Image (cartoon, rainbow, N blue to C red):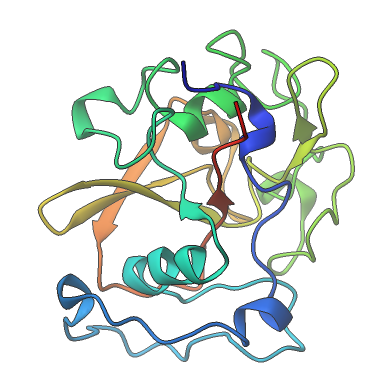
Length: 202
């Protein structure tokens, strides 16, 4: 039986120092033009990876020996199952198996995570908001799943892929885990990053 534990998600978003060591994407489905005038934020002086398209995120996680977060059982989450914590790995970890609205509980707390109420000017380094975490009992905390950067997810319908968690300009509604945005897989945006998942040993 696949594990649904939050420990199968990376504790933090990806940082640039590690991302800079990754390989370039080679999968045929990732050979699409980028329709963005934004400069990719990959310099190691930046706190976390943003302005990365879905394909680069997917390939980085493979390079790191993990995978872009998708289904609890492995592989992609069907678009119709994104709100099902028994199927979607990201949603399961964020909501404590479907029992929470935010990583820390059901009541929104201003300034606890890096969103609009924190009055920051951009994403913070991983774990920069130490109270913005959630976890299953007895397991390591998972940071910044609300606010900071949206996170690409391995859940696509055609070229449209899911992005979760809101960003530093989000608010109470977008910070809730029920909120799922979508974007074309080849789009890069300075509000969007990713985290990797892995399958814990049985």
